[in-house]
Length: 383
Ligand code: CAA
Image (spheres, rainbow, N blue to C red):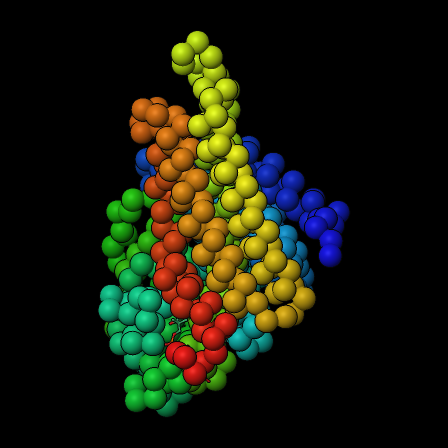
């Protein structure tokens, strides 16, 4: 057992930290207020190799591996959660195309994701009546000669406004449950594929989240990812990896909050001494760092298993569950340490709390993570 990072992993972590502190942290508050995401930042991140971290060099990726990806996500999440979720979904989409796309699709899209010609990718699974239960989706895809015709709609699609490419799920057979779901690639601006209204969200406000209306959207047969009916598994495999990304980001947000609060506690004088001298504050800080470190280790263990090619579904869900729930608790404790200052927008604590909130919701709610973990432990017969 070795808890040490390799030289390469340390380099990636330091590079991501340096970029995040210089380019993201100073802008995060403004991005939150204006909701105007500075797209050149994404391009710069791509140039640093942060958008194709799990992709081989021959397609333009940085081949950094899952552990380095997790470390980088934590650093980016610490500075700006809106940027982190964009990075997370983009890496996930690149990987889906690499794993399940044909060679033409790989060559057409992956290099553009990796070098930033695309301002990210989007993962269009969720529908208004199919959130935790994507198998109940209504969008359909029908083969017509050499083309699929897609109809339906999606909601809550991260980065849809800017993304250069979308992975979209639809039913090719509505009578066979999850085995009737297929996944397709759709390029930005494709006729019949319309990105709609952007949600006015509580947090991560710099990351756009849109609805999509799909009307008689004709796609060449080659847009299919994997085989017909394989779409649900493609989504599940992608989400296993994605959950490591979200857990890593949540650790970053939690660390940002508690590190800020610890510094504040050293300088805030009440009753004639810094509040860091009071045991109540010390315990909040000690518990927060301890719990975040435990969560970080669990997320990294999932990343490690994944990197070794071992089964990691359970660990990814455990990592996401623990990291996102812990980070939310930590953000609230950190806000408490700042008292009234934590509650006003001149300080970043209220933003950390808002940004962190969604991490227990997207890429599977905490309740879904518990369902996945229980099924992995108890076996499918108890499903
Ligand atoms: N890997 C591979 N295959 C898997 C799998 C996994 N992790 N999980 C399930 N499968 C397979 C099963 O083995 C089964 O295959 P067979 O039929 O061949 O046996 C098939 O998929 C169906 O599995 P289930 O019966 O378990 O499916 P279910 O309908 O009961 O759902 C679920 C399982 C885990 C609850 C799933 O619905 C789920 O993950 N829900 C949450 C959805 C989610 O996370 N959405 C996130 C949206 S994207 C997002 O948030 C991105 C963003 O914007 C940030």
